[in-house]
Length: 250
Image (tube, rainbow, N blue to C red; front, side):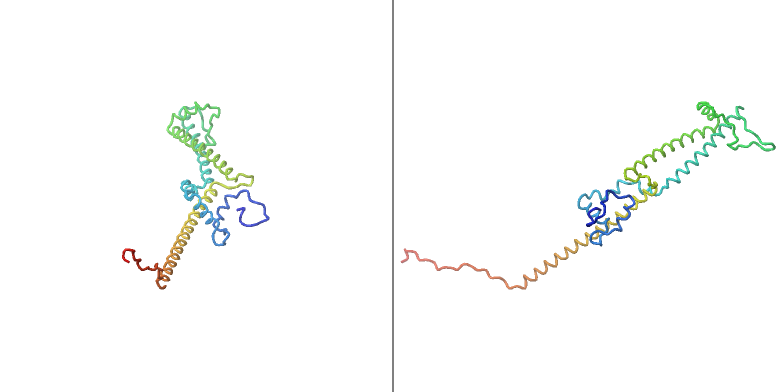
């Protein structure tokens, strides 16, 4: 990026993730080859194994289809509904033991609104678990709470890893607003653009080889035609001298 011609502008020390999407639009020094095609050429000449970097990112395409904010909202909604189920399960188990009472409205049947449940907030964890285990809905609530808690832990771990990933790419500044879906969409799009540029480069290389082969064949035929149309070159043979007479024959 810093060697694309003379300039008085300040040299770039890095580039943003979003700029990856512009590599297939920016033109290189010949105004024909895109910058991404030039990158493919450089990688192809120096380390062909890097051309298959997409194989090291098998989950990027799947992650691109996931909207993280929507997943977080659904998890929070699940936690809210599960809290209601927990209170109802405690009330159900409690009503059988006649420990807790549910306020009733005059002239109305029993109301199971979670906001009207009188639950002892000072109950210990052991007492609550024991009470929930006494009913089927309580057992369901315990199992669901365990699974949702594990899911929440995994979400928190994913958030931490994503924050470190943004830091690694230098996208963790005060003005950084990149979300998970945006990041993986950029990487996935770049992978597709890279494959397209790679195919274009391969076709250009094959066309170049065919042109060179055709030119070599044409030069070979031309040389052969010249040789056939030229008169044969006579070789200068050494002159033969008459045999010398021996002294005995005189």
